[in-house]
Image 1 (spheres, rainbow, N blue to C red):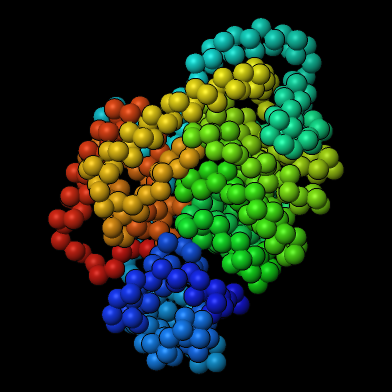
Image 2 (image 1 turned 180 degrees about the vertical axis):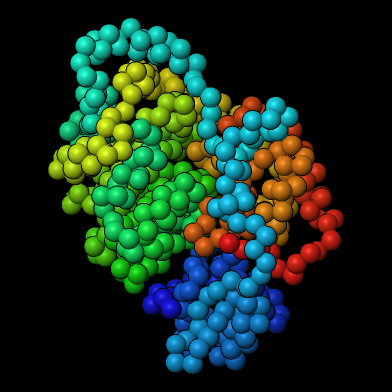
Length: 481
């Protein structure tokens, strides 16, 4: 049983928008259930005592007792005398799981007649061919040596360091390690920083491949809900209570929600991590992809004064997924350790691909402008089609990144994804993005395809939704991971 808990005041703050329905205890029970299902209340979280929550909400203890009874009856709470009450999920059939049945759903579809909304990655930008030609012309300068540089080519490390400086974070090339993609960067850091059994805090929802990497490292996942944005107070309490050693965050257009962490939130997150003694990995894969020109905060590491933040970046989203080039920004001593540690993985990243990224970074403003224009058109087309054809789906319009995180009117994301494949559209259901297998009333919808293709995808999703609505119920509760 976990020792993590939430106070009456903290839970009351999350319940501040409970609709004024009668009986009130049922409205409270439904609100707590929704917080569990969307990940803001993690599983095995000890809930406040009835008296404490009643005081915080300004209602009678009898009301809270009735709400807790309803939660236990629905399978969302368990209690034991002397140990209190904690959140759980109802026991139900496991007909689908995020990590198995829907693992292929975020692998690009190969059939010509299937619209793939499972992959949030665009094609190469217009300047790509010119960048490749320039890199090929430069390659002979490097072909007389061994071709191995564990830290990465100096021109690329310099270009990455210059980009950090332009974003408000002075950086030396000696702080940069070039990796074969951001996924390798994360795996390398996990190998170096944690041991099996260590607690790693992850956002819920978050990037599925990051969850896979943390699980493979043998770490204990500690989810922190971000569906309503970052709750720094709750996340900070979780860091301390679970003795978290490492936190993995996506502060820039969070994948999949699209949230952008504000400057004050970044400062508060780092203060909470410092107080808990935790290191932080900041995944900046989407940091260069604002759409509506929001004022971008400085990188998370710029709020760090003790080398606590390690930043991970990638060429995949801004430039092209086929360029398997990522990077790590850390302290100089940590960068030196990483360069040595990667020797057992792949020794070094491909020289030609590094040179291509050097050329693309030299034209980064041009590429960013192209991406913003294309993504804005596709995002707006997708949003308009959803509002017209699926008006009961709820979603905030992201100001950057590459996907809409849509909330469905019922927890049917898994059967909807199955029906979508039959109608020629591939999606990834919400549970794939959750550490605890919840989020079955959410669907990630990338907008990297052209507007007309996205409009057709929504037509197919609407047909799939009608199939799900008309299907006879075959289980009393949705399947959870």
